[in-house]
Length: 575
Ligand code: GLY
Image 1 (cartoon, rainbow, N blue to C red):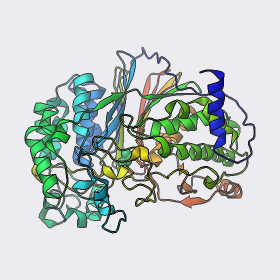
Image 2 (image 1 turned 90 degrees about the vertical axis):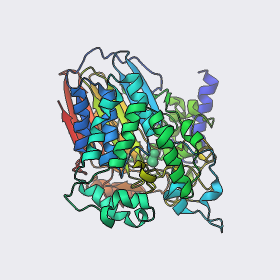
Image 3 (image 1 turned 30 degrees about the vertical axis):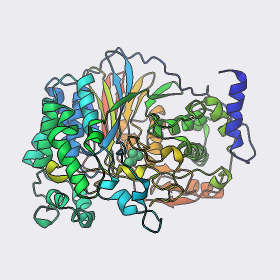
Image 4 (image 1 turned 45 degrees about the vertical axis):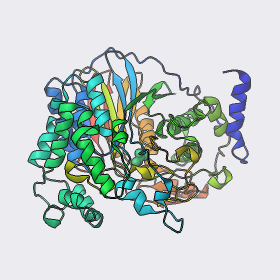
């Protein structure tokens, strides 16, 4: 990059604030986004899996025992979560995956995000008086994008797996057919959404057997979903996107007022993309590019932080510095980002360490920068009903997958007798320009809905390769995904174990609203008082996230796996 361009980028970073600058103590070389080789010739010899449900973690190990690798195990875990944790992700949703392929020492990003149907019409998301129709955006078939999950899993198996789909999908098919005891979170989700589930006969038939939510401790079966996975096992993509399943999906969607066509389904493709690679203090962070905003936002945050020595700060100043980095990253991310196949994004600027230099100079040493002093950008979606799992296999293959149907039980719409619960991912588009959605969000043009376009996501599945230790990390949590994963990576770089990382108390800031969300106990009284004196509004919030992390200490060749203690159904296991 020539000197003139570097200075233009630094000045752009500075130009966004009228706050007086101070010289941040530059204690580390600026982070870059240049990929560096990750020489991992070593093999762990064992495997580790951490997911949101013990049945899914065990399904992964079952497939490893059949001779599968991490990618086959990922197919088993994701498809099993579709059955046992349908409130968070599933066959009618989509996912994003960061992969490390040991044999070729290659990092890959797989985008199985949903797309808008070709007939998407922004007017469908407005009431007759022009106000946003939140029901259309969040419930029923209009809220659903064309699913990416089946295509993504078929891609994983075909390009990276060792086993046929019939083996890697076998645990999910068996559990759906024979039944399982839903955990308290799924039962609460069904009870919470009962009124909406009752609106569609197929949704009621699946989730309200005998007209009621399943009883605690009772076995619950989903034979329709089992049959749909069987068609995928037999025919691959064609088992979902063509033929019987496709016809049934389209008929059910259209009969209930949706606009999908067979061509929408037949045209869906999972896509490999270049992951974002961040170099932070000698750690290579491989993470999600657009259409996720996560990697770009984390790159900005880590690039800003690389100019500070957090280890020399008291807790209040450490939090202040991190929150100011979050504020500046979140200010940018919704303004610019969308589906790279549809929008041009200034990624070179946003990822540049020189741009971060400018942003860093605008941080005051002892004072919060009010978000109102930075040019306006929208806040982002804090939806919480997604799932993440992490895998390392004995050969050192790694998989980080964050998967979602968006809000709790997605659209609550089940398509006919397919057993497919559709997502409500259309709400992740900026459906109504300049109108806030249910979370007070304003949308930008980059994320406006268009036929075939992927809606912006916060999903940030990440692989972190340090000089001696490696982590596979991610979490659900809407916009808090980005700050959770960023805080988790920071703690990993600082030497924490998998169990410590998932257990750490959390804080979150996302530019707007101009508050810091705090989990009970995250700060001591003196730190809270000091942060308030600096100008922060601290907002207590119920615990959030469901982080599932595996780590590999290459010095001792030890694997570790941990699931977030906030949700007891999860399981991290090494075997
Ligand atoms: N649906 C939540 C996300 O993708 O960020």
